[in-house]
Length: 230
Image (cartoon, rainbow, N blue to C red; front, top):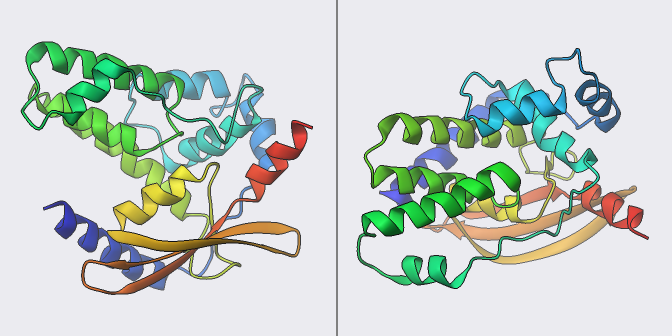
């Protein structure tokens, strides 16, 4: 089922992108102006509060300011990662359906990630939706998946990834893998290249149907943030 959905998503993505001719490059100066303005609907504290409440009325424009604007926060680390405790690892390694107690442990762990490190690995949002499926909480499942795909749409307004000029802008490398996984692509190799002052990750792989895929991701922002540390 997951393979079918991933393939379907990739085909739909290819069709939509084929109709699209203009993409939006991230304007961090404009974003910063909005997220620091308390009177703006894109004020960072307001947006994050709505996001943490899983507000499904958040638009792509809201997500654009929230996702890319997060790199303007003083504590943002593009190389941050999620460290799972031994209890969570043990539960996830078990192939049996988790018990009610285990579901609560997983729910707390992934809810904390959703609230504190939502963009470190977008698949954690999917995982939280799956956890809620054990409780048959249809409302939460739909809301979380809505947020997840809205974030994916946000990344895709920056480019189709087919060329350097239309590279998909990401704020950490895990989001590259998130998209490749969503497209049903098994990554075979990757490379880093620099051109005209910008940096790109190039990921290559194949779908289950043996279709070759090569996508460009703009990682210039990561290098900019890394320079600020020194």
